[in-house]
Figure (cartoon, rainbow, N blue to C red):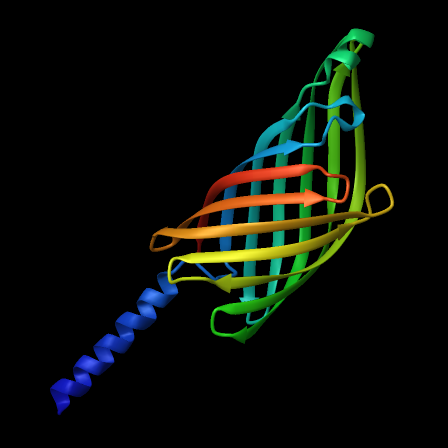
Length: 205
């Protein structure tokens, strides 16, 4: 009987260890991804390429701090370059906020987030270094769903006070490859028809 109880305890301990090592459905993580964005030629900018990073830290259940940095680089369209002597343009965005999450049932969480970001762009135009910056706020809701033991799918709706109102609809897929590592794929579109695609990794902590 003691041997059976010992085996059960060992199995439960192994199960708890395996679960804690799973990178899915966690709120302590760091993401890094390549990102491509197509603004459909708005303001004469061609599609941009860059890197997107995100950090989430959950000090206690149902609450997390969120932050991130996004860098993107793009070229002006030929019509713009024919008018002025200009280089490519760089975008930098720092974001910060808080997240509330609720475990509705095993494998399904609902989310709500609020925060802000600081946006900066710069380019060399006609020999002058031109910069622009802005501070914005955002709010959104979302969900996380564990589709299989190794695959998670997320959906989010986000509002930002950009040009009146900017609504972004996005989805993320996470696929486990190691104990604390998952491959990540993102796709999003906003109400101005700008499309964003991303691919990278998530490291759970």
